[in-house]
Length: 333
Ligand SMILES: NC(=O)c1ccc[n+]([C@@H]2O[C@H](COP(=O)([O-])OP(=O)(O)OC[C@H]3O[C@@H](n4cnc5c(N)ncnc54)[C@H](OP(=O)(O)O)[C@@H]3O)[C@@H](O)[C@H]2O)c1
Image (cartoon, rainbow, N blue to C red):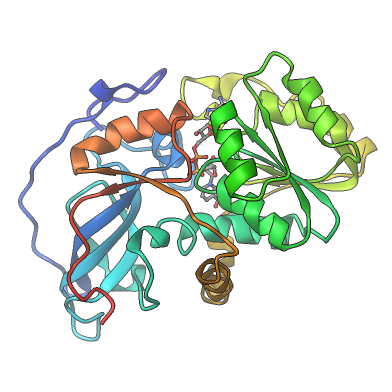
């Protein structure tokens, strides 16, 4: 981060810097990164304390990294093995050995950013634990074409729900309803958004999986059924451009009280002990074709800032990521 953004994110807020690798501590490993994630949280941490303290100028943008171990401490993952970890937008990462997750199930590496990574787990735990979706219920997902959202809708359908998407474009909505099993979709940028939304949920909303917060969530509140659940996954509308000061959604307290709603946030890390079991379920669904991950991957470290700006502007479909180099040979042997 070259400069702290005060408003909308811009390429001038970033710079690429080359630095020599420092010496490794005895419990650290060196990883050659193959893929990096691009996620809205990268924008939020540039000027706000979130799940971690906000960045200081000169720090590297945090992200998930998927890579190959080059050096390892005794007892650590073997040299050449594949790992995922919380690292940063960098070609090589130095990681604590307790920090890395070994990747052993053969799958396209991109899937470890999406369906077999943090976003698949976020969708899964948000719907099953926080939303407690039951068959026959109506589930609405905002940010529905994004990394979390395109998986959340499909998982909600696998749980037996009727599923409605909210995105920012008609093109994305066509992909969701024709390729990814969403029952209906509405465009938040349309002049008739509130009316369109109301018409797509004639039986009301039982579970709202919220990735964006703000005015979209405000439009949801009057449509929630009694004892409905609002799953607070993310607040992308507040990440870019200083919207954090805006109050809202308006009417929240009265809606929650009078409809006996549950409005509950969570972090995917809250369920860390269950990641392995959940990944098995997600792997079974994806390998059998019932859960279809989509990824928008650009090439080269220098493409990351523009990919983040594009994502915040709503231009990605599925998980956004950056590929730094080809898959290592014999990746899963
Ligand atoms: N709780 C957790 O542990 C956890 C873990 C991972 C991610 N998350 C959160 O999940 C959310 C989704 O992450 P993702 O990686 O899947 O991102 P994403 O949905 O792929 O990208 C963000 C999308 O948000 C929408 N958006 C942007 N500005 C908006 C605005 N002002 N109002 C409404 N929508 C807006 C855009 O889509 P449209 O234009 O199509 O609406 C944009 O493409 C983020 O808020 C992230 O922080 C939470």
